Image (cartoon, rainbow, N blue to C red; front, side, top):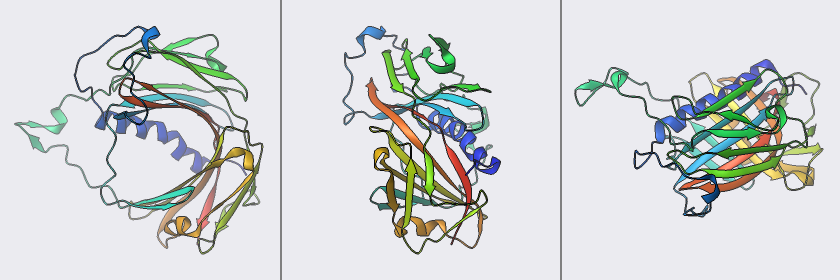
Length: 299
């Protein structure tokens, strides 16, 4: 199965949407920058259970060329979107959300309009050194005006087995020494099987997934998303031990994806290599993956 262009667009937008969310919900509590030496990352770090914020650092590789490095941080844990309903079904979680509320950029706030407000900058750990794959021995990436990091390559960004690393020099968030992960192999989905066109999937019964190429210590992640003509959406995310080679999505997680007014739906899968650490009050997830996907009709 090939990653169709209509499936690829939502994936390409993921980093941009995450960047927008991080800017919206995360600004430094103190408002002051605290430059910290990279060697002192262990000093004053919060345990993952005690962290008050989250960070995401990802290396992603498109199957037909091109890759992206993205990083963003927030010192606050996001609240659940208003009006969304969540179904927790073991290894799968499905979230159904109504259309987002209309925004009024001209609303007055304390004598000024929101459009005139100063942009919020997400807290970040300053300049990053990224290494491995296309970055070689080291390439420096600076945060953009919103406080997030983005580097897009028209060619391959990593190959399976590459050691990918990132370190930060320090900013509003503390510095941290190099953290590394090994780029995962691409898995081959063997079920559900299709002929290269749109898959039709029944949501009335559990759906069996099987794959080859899973690596011990990694996760197989499957996401299914249905976009509705109303502007709402339903999205299922499942995560399993990649080395098992098979798993099942329960029907209760699939049912919200079936709708008569679905505009388009897709299924995306990948093997995820992931490492977690903390910097200051932020629990960070460092990951690498190469997504594949296909269009789907959920019934």
